[in-house]
View 1: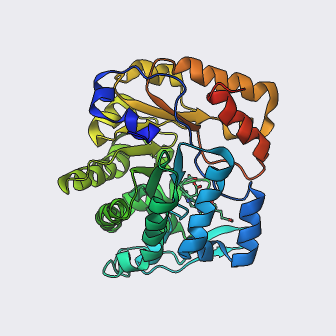
View 2: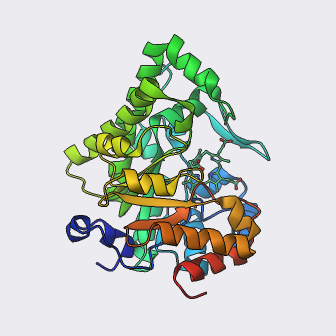
Length: 345
Ligand code: 1CP
């Protein structure tokens, strides 16, 4: 297969754990404000949502980092909060403040009927990318995991501390369960539509998984992830699925076997050596360079890259960051990273 990342997931590759260097590489949030060409287009387009919802612009922004760096994968330019918007919740981006939604306390006000037609611009962006990307580049579709998306729907904004949402889930369990169940159902439909529109691989972002522990983590993070993946498999979709349960405290082997994700994306603070030892060699891992080290560059960057390559040597993995790229990242540091991973620097 010409797409390097997909080769990791073929049957042959799964039966043998060994994978030849260099590993494939892409970066979470690889399109965005650290690139001057993104800033230029964003100023012209108006707002972030206009960029996401105009397929020609979203296509162009997705292609920008591919042209510059030749990453092995492109992730469609969109956002996890377009699902709540497609369910009828107001979404806007206050300049310099991040996303805002009209907060909800139950699923009553949400309407899933028009969801896919409201998400049509992102599906069209995928169709365009399927045609315009180099044939070696894997096209990634995505959504947020139900727990993470629900935190934004209930708070109406991004929070640093998710204790109030965990409290809501305990004190309004029935209402919270209904929101999660709806998100599971619509995520399956949306991911299936993304595959039909040309996505080769999927990533499900559970960015706030670290806010829950124990049986609550199992109930609100593992179960919905497992249901989404099982729902797609029941529709005969065999596309590889990467899960990103950021900062989870749960044993990774158990998470992988219960969710049946095809790959696990490790966050910045994950202990690579412990996770490598605790998971089956056939489990594909992704990660986990500290985005702050990519900002710093120099010796610190070289050392961090080399340590990741050493830890994963002989094992199948996808080189990535431990979380999204930071806005202050110098674009040259990204060129250097790609060259070093590909053993060219
Ligand atoms: O120009 C701007 O101001 C927009 C900043 C921006 C961008 C570039 C936002 C707002 N979203 C995105 C794109 C995006 N978001 C992508 C595709 C681009 C790419 O990877 O190249 C993806 C995959 C996401 C996913 C996303 N959105 C997540 C999960 C990943 C993560 O970073 O943890 C989350 C939590 C969001 C919500 C969101 N959207 C935007 C912001 C600033 C946030 C975080 C808000 C917060 O919690 O404070």
